[in-house]
Image 1 (cartoon, rainbow, N blue to C red):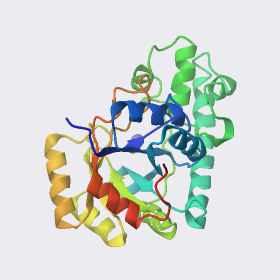
Image 2: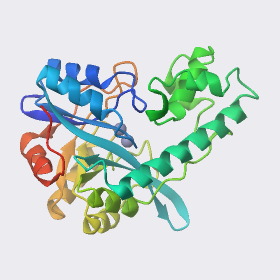
Image 3: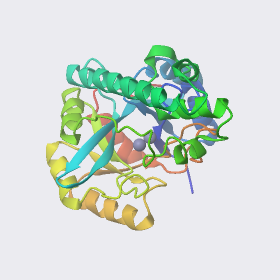
Image 4: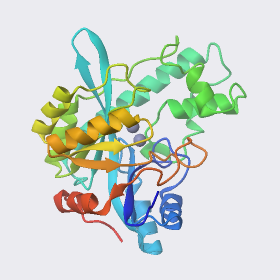
Length: 292
Ligand SMILES: [Zn+2]
Ligand SMILES: [Zn+2]
C-alpha cells in the first residue's frame, strides 16, 4: 500500500482512550511518510493545542477534529451506535460545546457507577481509575481507563481481555451510555461549520444492526459530508457497499486507521488512508485551516 500523498484521518491520543500523546502522533505520522494526519479524540478538542505545537515543530500537516458518539434508535430493535468524525469545525460552536459538555458529564457519571459496582468484586476504586487518566479534567473518561485500572490490579493483561471479561457489554457491570442522536450531532457540527463523516459504518463488531442505505441517505439529507469507507472493521463487502453509497449520494469517501497508539490496539498508523483530493475538499468545506 502506498502512503505517499495520503492522509490518516482517524487517530486517537491520551486526550481520549489512546496511549500516546499528540506530539508522538505527529512524529510517527511524519516517520511513516504520510502527507498529513487528523487528530480525532472522542468527544473533545482538548488535544488540539499540543498537536498544533508539534505540527509546527515537525512542519507536518495537521487537521484538527474529533470523533463524536451518537445513537440511532431502531423502533423495537437494538439501537445502533454511530461514531461521527468531525473535522475542521469552529471550536467556539455553541451547540457542539453544549453537546460535548453533556457527553462528558454523562460518561463521568456512568464510569463512577460502573466502578462502584465493580469495586464489590474487584480490587479497584474510583481513585485507581482516575490514576490511569493521563490528562486530568480534559480527558474523556471511559471504559478503557477502567480496563487499565483492572490491568494494574493484576486482573487482566490487556484492555481486550478486560473488555471480554468484567467490562463486557453483555456482562452484569455494563451500563449503556446516553448518547445524542445522529441528527443532533450532524446539526451541531454543521452549526460549527465543520465537515462530518460516519466512522466505520460497516462494522459488525460494534453493531448487530448496521445503518441501512435509507438511514445513510437520510443523514446525507441532514448535511452529512462523507463515509469512512476504509477502516479495518468494515469488511470488503461493507467497504464496497459504502463506496457505492458515496457515489450514489455524492458523499466523500475517507479512510483512517483508528490508531490508539502502538500499545492501545492492533491498528497501525496509516493502515487505511484518505486520498489527497478528498482531503482538499474537506479543507475547502471546513471552518478551520489546516495546520503546518
Ligand atoms: Zn469509533
Ligand atoms: Zn476512533
